[in-house]
Amino acid sequence: MQLDSYIKAGKIAAEVREMARGKNWIGKTVYEICEEIEYEITKRGAKCAFPVNTSINEIAAHYTAEPEDPITITDSDLVKIDLGAQIDGYIADTAVTVCYDAQYEGLVQAAEGALTNAMSMIKAGVKASDIGREIEATIKQMGYKPIANLSGHSLEQYTIHAGRSIPNIWSIGGFSLSENAAYACEPFVTTEEGGGFVRNGKIKNIFALNSRKKTKNEEADKLLDFIWENFNMLPFALRWITKKWDEKQARDLLEYLVKKKAVQAYPVLIEINEQRVAQAEHTFIPDKNGVTITTQAQQHNFKTNHTKSNTFP
Image 1 (spheres, one colour):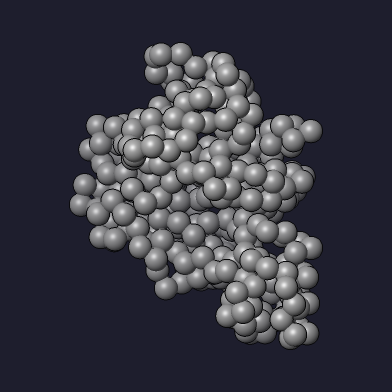
Image 2 (cartoon, one colour; image 1 turned 180 degrees about the vertical axis):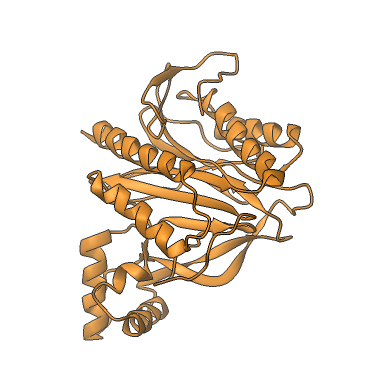
């Protein structure tokens, strides 16, 4: 059953997120972090829905480790660990910000608080724009800025961004949450000195299939088949390919497939004033009475009321 797969994936993602939250990563490379977290997902019986993101400081999202990536976590870093688990293509998407510098702890609390307040108002029929209003208000009340051009999103089988957006600021119009549909809510927060927007960076090390149309390059077509068989339409990392192709050949083939528009490459996203960014994220499924947060640390179905709840970590 679809709901069972969402819930199973969510339980696994939540367990691994809490492991990531509690571990001391200082001195570890981002390669070691990504590989360990991805291993923890697979050993629990799920597949990775996308490469683990380890986005540091002003990088808001979309950085995953390069093969043998030497970047090492220090005691002044703010690390956003965004991870996904999938069962038969049904996805749990969740994130935590790990902070080792007390001066940035407020950023983390603002992201978590915005997510808490957003989750407390969820049920079928709630407008996405009202969720954005709540997220923005919470963040600003705590003295920080939301990232306006990053948002949550609807989820479908083998599709992480399924066409609907849940904003992190108030916006006109938008849609209402559907009963028994899956969504991810992910507030991003920056400092008062931040611009409140992200821009594309030069690094692109996360990829996804666009088309299975053959390119007439035999080795590139083998890679296309490999991507489809192993990842479907979900994102993947270069280091996942180097298990079958050597690194240089894998890079060359991916570059060729991107030029042919068979594969898309996602750039890292950087805060425009290069201020630090924190993130928190849950996957949830609304119903007429409330919400099931699939990535809740302990699984419950919550009823929505008109008071703010403190039961959503």
